[in-house]
Image 1: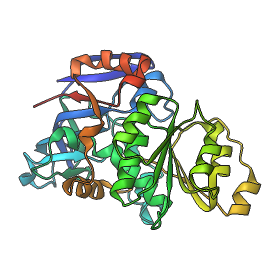
Image 2 (image 1 turned 180 degrees about the vertical axis):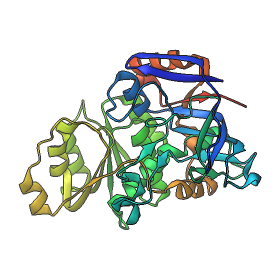
Image 3 (image 1 turned 60 degrees about the horizontal axis):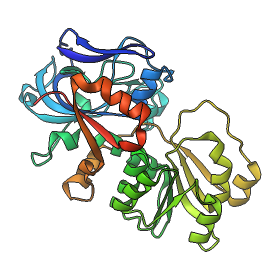
Image 4 (image 1 turned 90 degrees about the horizontal axis):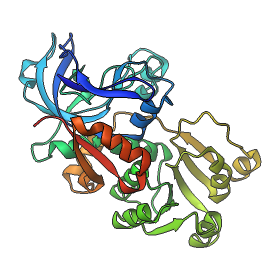
Length: 340
């Protein structure tokens, strides 16, 4: 079978790989579509501390079950599915308290084990979620990034009337924007330094946008909130140096959701945290948010296809990676067509 394999940092190719077999409790998927994520780019650049090379990457994908392993209902063959990439042990403390997305022994499909940039992939049957017949497989491939947004927003516990600031209008920032609107958050400010991304944010429902290159972000946020500050901040830019500003922009009792994996230290002004009783929230992957996302898509509150800017064939992935490396402002979600 054909697959996109990263052999080492900056060393990747589309090549021939052995077709997988379904072990007990697993299913083999004929992959239809897969999305290229920022974390896939980090793997390619050698900036992901968790990956072990060589690796077939890809954790945003959907397809059709081709075969099942021992213990899996044979009736699932031909089922249309999307894949939650979080594989947990079920035994450690996080798993026991219902937080499998931070499992002590977690494996992530496409990072710790082979993923969806291949014609076929074997995954645990429990990670394959059946999708409605009316949902196209290309849209279903993008359920995973929306699960990231659903997770961070859930962790921030929005209250009626809360305003939200989304820092960064890349793909994750845009999914947070769309998911927040689906959850009923009405006033959403989005900031970025690229006008093209901010224009997309407005198209997708941002009530206010701020170009942080042209305006003083803190002053603009305080002006937009009548000096009060903002209850909810989602950091989708993941720039450690921005944390002090987030602490200042948050209103008392505010919640700040952090999504970045940077190992660079951030300045934490304890006075700002304590005097406002702020909550800093880490959010990793998703905690069983796929059913919630699927429900929002079914009801029309989410439109994954609005994120897609490019569609490429599997063999064209090297060119797509060059686009994302050198002209990220021209792309939102690049979707890879792998099978029919």
